[in-house]
Length: 374
Image (tube, rainbow, N blue to C red; front, side, top):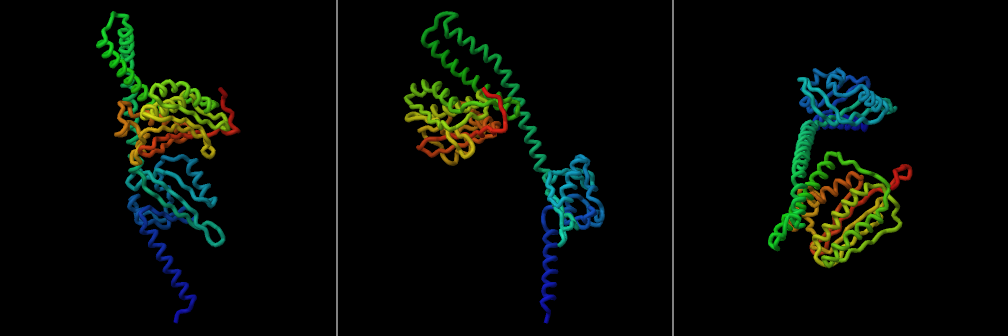
């Protein structure tokens, strides 16, 4: 009858066999080296990824995979980390046996004995080459689109300015009298020219934001004062439509850092949207604390937005089926980019028939920073 010691030994051997098979079966490449960085074992996934067999690579230093894409400082940091007993994680570019390169996410962990001394290192490598190539292709495609938007917008802006001025002169009857039918047609033309001008401005703003070319004038400002200023500007428009515009500001909110022109653009866009989609009731612009952030919200009593449409609200060139107004579909996408550049967040809450509230939150200035005051 086997003794307990023999049973324990058998169980230990079975566990070791299980662990070995598990490492061999995983889809990511696994490499084990001794403490002097000589390769002692690799799994089948490693062989498929690199083109080397275990016999070819056993005893070799992992630098056999060196692509030449990383600096000496990079490898120095790696060695200091793993010999210091820590896990090193990074994105790397390695070279296969056939000379082709591939991008991988790698993690190298030290293995220690019962006394805490390093005996081996285990490295896992996850191939992300296709993902990186796709990301680069998407990036290039986006840059191409942004360049086209910029070029087309600037090309259209010059003749559009001339058309706007011509319409102004004709409508002002500087070139002669007009009958009512002529005036009506010219007013329609002027309205559409103004809409096209707004579209061009939106496209240019979006292009600058997406390409990170828009400079922000970050200073300390009073967000409550800005809310009051915008409410005073928009009140005549709400009154004309029979709506009530209310502000509800938390006076404990300190000055915070933001670009006043851009946050004005965000707030104006949100209030304009609320007015556009609200036929009766009120619009409330509120400031409050959201944890350690300052939150600004614009609520309306309009028709609301369905839950399935909410995720699309801030996507570029998107117009919800219930909100076809002939706009660019960029207004809220631009708001999202502006808030993102401020290290803030923007989101919406809505229920059909219950109105919509759009919130954005901005960080409070850190005391140790010394931004320029207004």
